[in-house]
Length: 548
Ligand SMILES: Cc1ncc(C[n+]2csc(CCOP(=O)(O)OP(=O)(O)O)c2C)c(N)n1
Image 1 (cartoon, protein in one colour):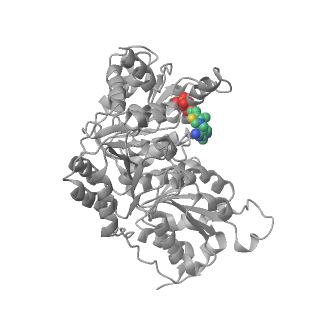
Image 2: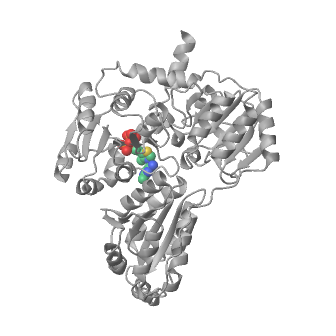
Image 3: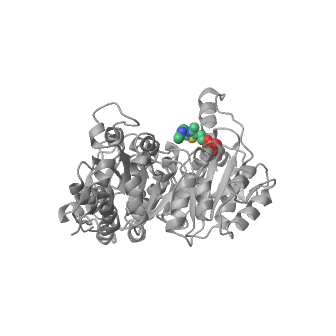
């Protein structure tokens, strides 16, 4: 043991947790921490707005399941972090937020930039604490990572008062243990669940992001193969089954009719796996409360009158699915054809022939799918484009299509893409944003160019908050307060020092996209989009099909 300043010990604790990056903006109250980071193995990545830092940590955590770390100073630095931290809470990403603070002795009175950050961040974190004494650093850091990474993962926060961080201390980091995997459920519950599934007439699986989080997609695929039961995915569960898998029923969650078309209306048993209720309320797929629900998850399910479960199998999803597959293998339930998948994929395939310009979403998505490999990454921002991507973009593998469906904050795509590329440098990373959301974190283009992070940003331009236009038109027959003008995005990108193109024809898009993917620096493509076909194509095509 040796005496050193507390911020040095703090950074040693981060190193013991395996932290590689801290995303953030330093402040006068984080001087010692930044000094210690500078002399450590941890890379500090300066960003241009703390919201960007929190989103980067969020994606880092989501992809690695090790907490991503972001840093802001006291007061305004902390308030700017809030949105990204809240996203990590509702989208279940492990994240540790660090904020500076004034000296302990000035917190009881009116003082410069002081706000009560602990209280501010309490509702958007699983746990948070102030470092009131350098001696507690090893425990507080270990706990912050342990709680953030435990199921279901989420954000924690540590506040670092300036005088504590510069004080001398003689202590050592605690060893970081991998978070324990949960035990399996008991034999009685397993048998009860198996009995319910075996006796089912029309069972269906609803799989969510929780499966991707714990890497259990292979076990889910095997469960579907062994039992024949079809699997519908939530937006955040895209790719758990390859969309070409004969057991894939499609992505549900846009409207209750999705569930009907995917077979939920007739289902007597619904097996939910890693389903987070935050994505789409059970009321939409179980409106009459008729379905018997077998819940497979890592923690006990939320209470909801439409989600009163018959059996809960709580523990390691991989093990549970594998054991259940064995129990149910000899009583198969052949998957029925999914009308949802037929309709949506039919429209997607038809998109390749659509030469209209401005481009319609199916053709734009078709071009992106052609340009990307099966493991490449598409990140959606939030808006009407997100609904199109969720509904129609075909995914082959989990964690290749990212859709924020918990907090669903606009502006998430660009910063999270930077982090995704840091984690997976060999995979292509493409974002699709609306012209509204893109400007919300546009400043991170500088971070991307400085780091030379070769991400391709596609902006679907319509000079409107498209999804609000859609909702207003549906509800009132008119829209209002949703129109805006845009900067010249190509010139804007140029000012940031990155190549950019505006598409003037249908052919331009695929050409620019394929070229952009060969570059070793970030780029931007502006694609004029035509949102005149309704994203609820199932209704439109449903009527046509019935008439034909
Ligand atoms: C930070 C934030 N503010 C507001 C909203 C509400 N909201 C959801 S979608 C949307 C419009 C998105 O417009 P745009 O980014 O242009 O995408 P488009 O819908 O046109 O595809 C708004 C205002 C939100 N989800 N997040």
